[in-house]
Image 1: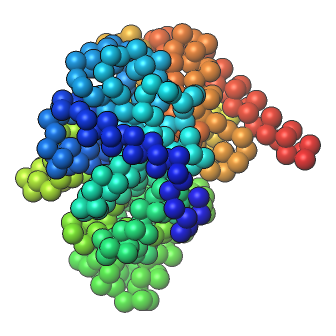
Image 2 (image 1 turned 45 degrees about the vertical axis):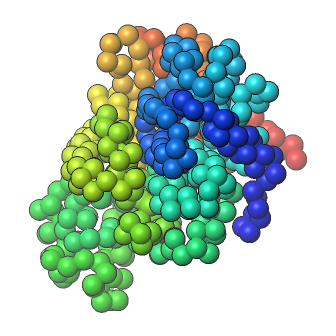
Length: 456
């Protein structure tokens, strides 16, 4: 779907079916994922249902199981956001009506469940529509007044990193419509984080700078040696100083092995909302901090404009950021284990696994290898696995969703997700076998793609 093209009729049709189900229901249960996209999705649905005068209950969870599905059968309508497309078999057995608002690649469609998924309309849910995008599409097709929820939607879009290559699909449609209404503004990005230079560089994870991120004294020394003011911010520097600082950071990133593609992603356009005086990346950062620390309700509240929740989330974000930087510094110093096609590390804080994978691979790991984080479950019976890839790896044929789904099943586990970001759960003690199988599987994917390319 190119820029300026309207939403496909099939997707709109499923959106209107979802709207009809909401109109008919009086008692609604909503279940959503606990990350930034899931919280954004839940907040949009909360606003939509509240404005429509509906009675509803919202829960946010880490993963959908058949048990959770079965316990949801006492409502008129069950709505699943940012999940559900992989659970159609269980959902179709429920007595209540079901609406799925998801963007993960489904194995099939459903005749019984109202299944809203961009993949069913040839829109890639990995890059061009997230859960919040789909919920926003439902909201604005329910009531034009719901366009004021666009900052929340972009918190989810940024949270699922669907802004790093430029907007497309449903996301570009939302941007263009928001631009017409004066709701959203695109602003140029920079290698230098916004805010006071010392604080911004010290707390920076995008970019992550080895030896600077997390070390305020080192940042002060770096700026002083460069002849730059330590009590200023990037916006107030003159052009010469801006160029100098950007160049020094670029050189530092190159020296630590950061690919040019990653640096180009950092300087991408950012999306600013005057109504909340915030960029989408900040919104996603706050929501992530809430979700990863078990404060999903706070995330919904701040997204809906609760000032006290916003203040508390800022504190959580700072604490979350400190934990993240500490883990990143340990990883950059101690290194990660590399096999032929993957690299991995063990992590004691499972809530950080996904973002640790992404930053490690982008800024100091091997960008040519898919990256995995493994952590024990709370009950010590399972191993949780998060994985991240890059767009160049996808071009080489890597599909993490397929790879983790198939290899986890070989060790009596389960997995799935997106081609570029996927997860799995396996029995404790099966990690070595799983990693070996996964390394072989990804090698096979690359080989198959290479052979396909050669034969053309």
